[in-house]
Image (cartoon, rainbow, N blue to C red; front, side):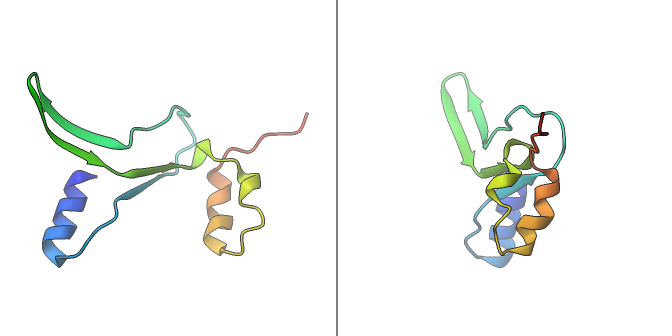
Length: 83
């Protein structure tokens, strides 16, 4: 994430808002949203980004969204099966 961010910033000389969308089904454990380079005595880099993990989201929260992208991404969201 950090490499993409820094290369885009350098190449185009624009502000880049870092976001990653995880679309896998498993694992369902939360993904980190920070990249850090640290030494025993100091943190020299802390890069934060938004991590959107689709399998952590409930598809029902997006069912009424008019955005077609939300509809497409719902297939990868958490779908609770009725009992």
